[in-house]
Length: 381
Picture 1 (cartoon, one colour):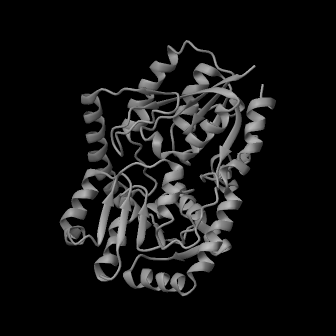
Picture 2 (cartoon, one colour):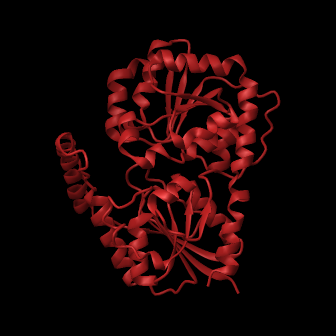
Picture 3 (cartoon, one colour):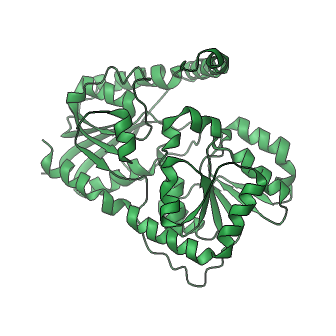
């Protein structure tokens, strides 16, 4: 008999969460799976119409109230942190408003499920209230600085799906919960790269100031012979800054913004036409957040599957880039530093590209997720 499995997430950008979508696809072969998410409204407005996803709605005026309040308070909190570095502000929209909607939904959920997978801490806490013991899928790492962390019942966590042991240990120090280490990677599928003419540079994923996209653009501002494609969704303010500061790059087509959506397979094929990809985070964000220090960036693994060498920030989460030799890690985003990284890769591009493929095979989702699927479908009771 096929199991009924529910996956719950608070996020409204499910199409940009490959781990959830890949897991859904693998489970759907042997179980009846449903996802509860929120209607896309910020990074994208596109819905996934292929999978069984129920999108929860938010109230327009309450959304405006909470997001504007968060914006104002987060600005003030930066000043507070100057005097109290341990101060942390948790956004009301994500930690109060969305959970209240999800709580109402779960209280009225009539279907019964054999297994429930809760994505991140807020959902884990709520799911335990209505379903008891559930599985935990960690995408964003948080620990006792989060109010929900203090509320969760560790005895009601059936398993933990996480990207690395270091991220598990950060969330559950001293706890021995059944865990599965699976990176945020796609299934590796061999591409026909023979005779492929790669050109230009690619920025894949969110076009966001917090990801140091402006620093990346400054490199292209100072190196007019290079071209960049920005491929992904972005917030309005970042786009406005790009228009104001780097409008000349856009008008000359030296930088192109492409926000059309591609599924995972199409996206990897698209990335394979570029010579080098970027994967950055703002250094202040890295310093302040363990989540970003150890970040399992989905776009990084897309680059690898495409055989596209990377230039990335030097953080513990990207150590494997040096281990496999599939790119160059840098300590700052100065144009001269990026230029030197480009020279290193271009000096032996094939070596770096081949290393990407080896890394992609190693981290391939279908291979690493199999023990979790077996546990979920046959062993977990």
